[in-house]
Amino acid sequence: MGVFDKMARQGHEQLSFVHDAESGLKAIIGFHDTTLGSALGGCRMYDYPDEEQLIDDVLRLSRGMTAKSAVTGCNHGGGKAVIWGDPEHDKSEALLRAFGRFVEGLEGRFITGTDLGTEYEDFVVAGQETDWVVGLPEYAGGSGNTSVTTAYGVYHGMKAAVEHVWGSDSMKGKTVAVQGVGKVGSVLVGHLIDEGCSVIVTDIDEQLVEKMVDEHGVESVSPEEIYSVDCDVFSPCAMGGILNSETVEQLQCRVVAGAANNQLADEEIGWELHRRGILYAPDYIINAGGLLQVADEIKGFDRERVMRKTAGLYELLGECFARAQEADNPPFVAAEEMVQERIEKIAQVNRIYLP
Ligand code: NAD
Image (cartoon, rainbow, N blue to C red; front, side, top):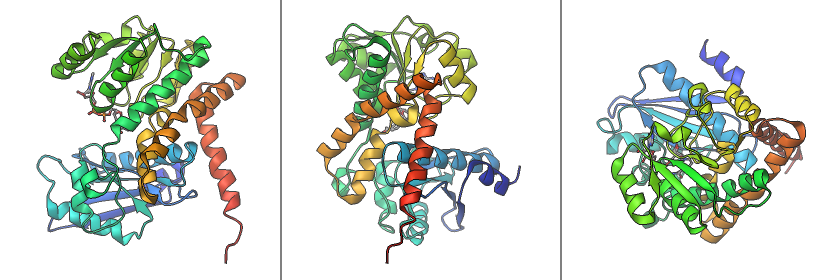
């Protein structure tokens, strides 16, 4: 399928291909739907095997950002940048500054920050060329690491799911299996322990697992065993695509609620979870704390306001679950409806002419 066909199929507005021979920069900035405002989304750097996979990723990721911003009440459209290259070997000051200049040339139509393969400090470098970067470290005037906020949102979202299934949002006595105890997962474990949960963790990094066992006395299992452990809640906080036909049949939980992006391998898996009576908290709602933080940074950061909005993901997910239940749909279908409704309503408002 050609690039324009792919864009038309998923509703994309624009793909900007940027190239700088001297620094070796090859990147694409993708815009999905900017009805709600400037496109906001991170910049990923990855050594894609070919151009097609680079294009597919920027299309998929920018579309996901439209949904995340729209459903959480942010006035931003969906955007994402992908830099084609190995972050270990190909990243340089010149490359990052060249990227920054292209972003500046978009005059605020695209605002970006860190993602897989890029670090907060990279945007201090790119920020020498553009004002349109967010998620900067505190020493550079930014709001700092987003993972604490993301974990706080996942914790509240998990409570909303527990409330929907068991009629009380108390996590006391619940068993939660956490896959991945990196920046988000480790903070989430702290919240769960504080509320009296039994926590089972796994990670491919054994040192991180040991740290959790030492700090919180949690149980640990191998990465392969995590899907089939007997638990109330399974919390994917590692990588995307982990809910697939192989893993879903192993799950023993009633709730899936975690930070990872793009957890469902495809929509059919969302329906399969629904048929099996497992409540899935749509990833782009439950993990939106980081987005709420960087969106706030654009207008002048206030941590208390961000934490309050992030805790509000509880109500948003409650609405999503109730709506899904009423129509006997999986929550991912209800979430998509909520996204479309907000975009359409605000599009109507934008029809009012302002001189
Ligand atoms: P991270 O890299 O710090 O942590 C991920 C952890 O998962 C690592 O410790 C890694 O070793 C582990 N892991 C990888 N593969 C695994 C496997 N097969 N089995 C078990 N563990 C495995 O990343 P993070 O910032 O904690 O983010 C976690 C997830 O949440 C990612 O999918 C990320 O895209 C998503 N997310 C993060 C944020 C944020 O603010 N950091 C915001 C939204 C979404």
